[in-house]
Length: 218
Image 1: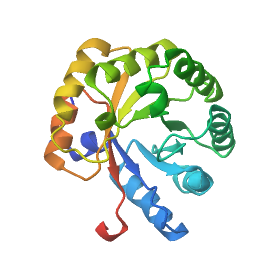
Image 2: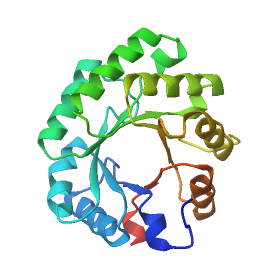
Image 3: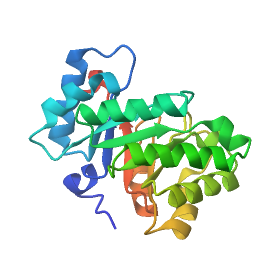
C-alpha cells in the first residue's frame, strides 16, 4: 500500500507527461527539473525530446519514457517499431504505446497480438506500457486487452481517458487488479490533476498515475 501522506512515496508513483505540441526546449528542460524535484518515477515525452530529457535526467532516478504513436495510435506497426528503436538508441528507458483502437473495437486479436509482440521485442526488455482510451471501449474489451498484454508479455496497461465523465476509473482499476495483480501493472493517465483521485487510484492498486506537466504551474 502506498503511503499517500508521504510526498516522496507518492511521487515515486507519478509519471509526469510533457507532450503538448507547443512545448519548447525551455519547457522540456523545466519539465525535467520538476520531475527531478518531485523525484517522479518517469518523465514521458515524444520521441523528439528523448535525447534532451535523457541528458537532463541522466544522474537522477527519473526514467525517460518515450511516447509512441501518440495521441491516436494510428501509425502502422512498422512505424511504431521504428519509433521505439529510434527512441531506444537515444536513451529511452520505458515506452508508452497508444493502441490501435480500431483493432480493439473490431475484435481483431491476432492482428493486435502480432503488433504488440513485435513492439515488446523492439523494446528489448525495457518496460512497455500499452495505452488505451477507456471511454472508447466496453469493460469487457478492456479486460480483453489486459489479457492480450499479459499474453504478449507487455508489462503495463495504461488507461488514458481524454475526459473522465461518468466513467468510474477507481472501480475499473479494482476490477482489473483483482484479476491481474502480479502479472500486469496498471497505470491511469489523468486528463486533469486531481489529488484526491490520485490517492484513490493508488489505494485501488495502480502502480503509476500520469499527470500533465504545466509550465504555468511552476
